[in-house]
Length: 230
Image (cartoon, rainbow, N blue to C red; front, side, top):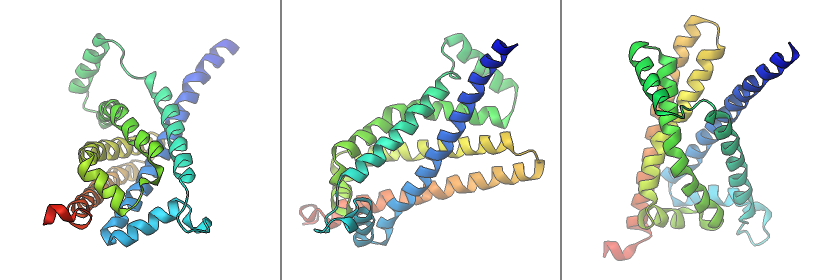
């Protein structure tokens, strides 16, 4: 009996780890998109946020340090690694399992299953895109700022990376929070309300992130690249 209980604790612990790390990463995404949205209020507002993240307030010269950004990126990376390790056990590793999952989603019209498939597909895609973003932040911690960020978006392919990563991250995160809500909320009406609110949050974050990206592109083309505008 003790052996059976010990075996049962493993999946339960991994389930908790998956939920906790996923919720933490979704919260980080929510905060990150709002910090990025400061660019909508002008380059000065974005530079102020970058100055705070660089701990410019602690630098006598007022410039700031790269270390806070590196530490934050390493913390996010650790959360991502733990989340991926917790999730990998549930991914279908064989083609027959993929076919069985596809058949199951066609036969059983269950929202939780559809959300899990959405998470699985978006998560696999993000495993390719997210490391690119993290490596950029690790190797260029001082590149946060209105001018370097906008030029990176326009001239270093950042616009394509963020255009792909934004909907994947938002849909993956919101789908995960929705599944957690559906799993742990015991009452029917709040469960339905939670679904509706999560759809609104996803739409809101997509619009917010899209507008921020467009403003970065505008700044890169017209504010910090005078040669392109004559």
